[in-house]
Image 1: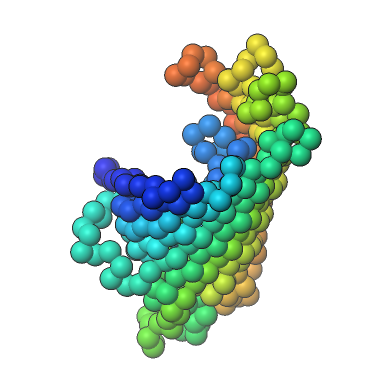
Image 2: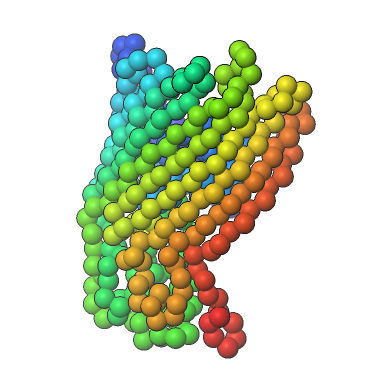
Length: 309
């Protein structure tokens, strides 16, 4: 177990519409969505809570940037962050040692027919040197064991077991790993209430949608989508209850271990998830949640005593 610092920032507005911030920034605040963002109160599955194409963005990192409020209901940010930031490393001397991650995002509130919604567009780019997914098969063992994706479960140990069983010679590297000096992701989402009680714009039922795309060279996730329905305080006698149902698809890059895919038919094309949840407020500080998830995993085979199945 470890304790980490996720967020400690200092912000100062220099005018009504422009401000600056500096410190250790919580990266999970990006890509906000009214119905599908906060895993504490909405969906638990990461494919529905976040955009998977941000797999190489750190959870938290030192950095700073600008906040622009051009009109009421619009927020634009531009930031420069340490691409290797972690919650447990608070040494400022390590920041930006291996490059920079630049991120920009804009979120605008809209009110068609008097119903609140949001449109969000963002992107990031980094020049940190990373292991490329495009490798000679003779280096595949080193590739899967050395790659790290901050927001994804480490696939290396699982894939290494397949190599140990079927291609042990590929665990011994024969040449230096190919590196790539860039990565990028772009993402979009919207949420829109379809009905709200009179005078209560932040309650009711609505829809959401999210899409992302990445380079697919350093990033194992090429595309990500999710869509669904969310509700907050749908009934007047249960004003703090929330509900949601959604579907998410995560598509892996064709560059991600193509040799293993072809030789062992591992799948690794895409993963689908359907989730249904209901959060019932018992007291202002206590809720009870029911959650159902149906997941069609990207990895389609497992290992047993006799081999892969």
